[in-house]
Image 1 (tube, one colour):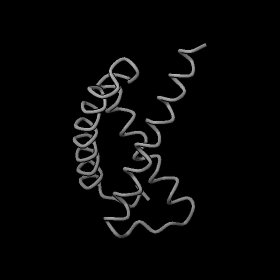
Image 2 (spheres, rainbow, N blue to C red):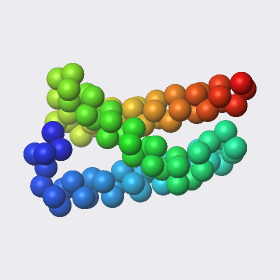
Image 3 (cartoon, rainbow, N blue to C red):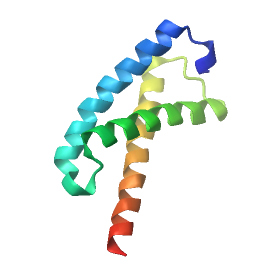
Length: 95
């Protein structure tokens, strides 16, 4: 899927996702405080979760040609990824 994108579009998409990731990462850092991963960590996890959700959806045959569906899939995957890692971090802290 990403191999079919032009370099300019791929870079543009990455920058947009990084911008959203920084916004949500900073907000999550203010909400989660020490339970989170910091603004930079949250941003990196957001970016990784977004693109991982896109790849997983593509592997399962979900067509992401509609931009709204692609954004919803990516945002859901990003927040699910951060949530799972935060739960794992909280569980490890309790041990």
